[in-house]
Image (cartoon, rainbow, N blue to C red):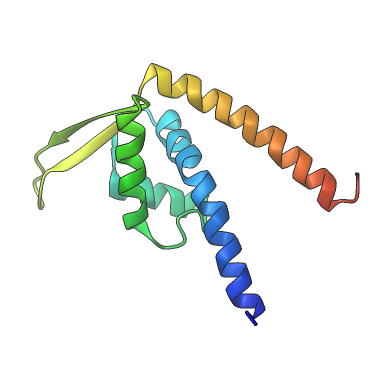
Length: 120
């Protein structure tokens, strides 16, 4: 039998898997400048504690998937301190998808909150 901590960890992992794309688009949608992976991860740590659950490496496959879907653009630039960096920016279709996803998130959150608060 699993203990409460392992149930919670599994639940948090499932929640994170469903929200990482949304928060990555949101961070890039709010940024005035293109950002590289580490900047995005640090921004998420500042404002969305727990979204990546300390696993920055999980963000890179999601960024690549969002780019492959046409929601992000990227370009590689040399770095003065280390390897070249890939900078990401949200595309116009990415902004449209972000708007739709935010609406879906808000509707889902309202529905779940209603159930949790006994409003059903």
